[in-house]
Length: 473
View (tube, rainbow, N blue to C red):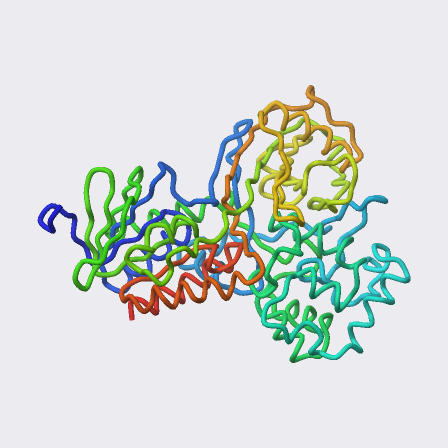
């Protein structure tokens, strides 16, 4: 198809998740005419919504980390500054094989800033805290000097196996759905190894990161959300883009990308689109698959797909949960017998706005399933919705120590996110850096999204702004 048959614009964005929408906004603000192509019918990617028992709830991300103000600044620019809220006090818990414990007040990925904090000592025991405190006298170069290192290797070498198993594995499993032995620490906790070298110990590096966070200190609360849910950010972004004249095309899957002169051509099922600049904001395997013909240096370098995650939302009439028995929620250590969920969020116990919307005695729980094990495999999961419902009732009862049965359920829903979480395996940062360098060298091209930025809205927003501003400059 020749150029006369193509839709020609200044810039094309592939993917309508947060990174794609934010890329379009930055390009439009810089004066470019922008078209966004999204394969699906919904915008926002993992920041979605669904209606359960008449409540509009987040179906994906429900908060953002406050270690930087990137998301808060974006919300402010979109007129949402007044809707930023913090979780209720109380923090999160962790379910260990020998029972529940409060998660320590100050940590990063579950790594404690102080091994002798009473909450840490209750989880680790005397010997565990003693071993963890050796971190302060070990040479800063221990593990930190390696080219690449996993979260597990760093924690075990600095603080010991007990910190890894009882604090880090539950948090990493809940957030990243993977065994910490598989994850690149530089990808999931950027700056932590640099902090270790600067401050001399892992605990001191964690404390420094926590001091620099813009959020409160209580465990499980170094996050913020939006009154009404994080999905309201997507609605505000879409309104902003329409106001800037951005063309938003849903149901339009990119099938090919080719270099045409100084620009790029994207082929879809029914039309081609030409643009001087191209931002690819789809998942890693799809991005490399689209670009490897035009950027031969990245051929054969597709990253692994992320784990499949299932979220079960329960709306209950259960006044016994008014006391919030596990604060804002509970993470599950993988060694815990009899529980298949990796995390439970007590959403009405976490967010005042949602408790008000639900009304007295009504509670919203969200249980998360799906985790990659230490061998890099995802164990066989629960396939049918009714199996997930039954498992969620059993798990919620055990984790909250309150009997929850089918008769308590007002409404429920299952949301599946297949391969949606970026899988930052050891060495991933080096690999994506190489991919980005090759794409940058091709000219007029940027790749963005969680697979290159790291998991979470804060990482994605910060990275996307940096990359697109570099591209448009």
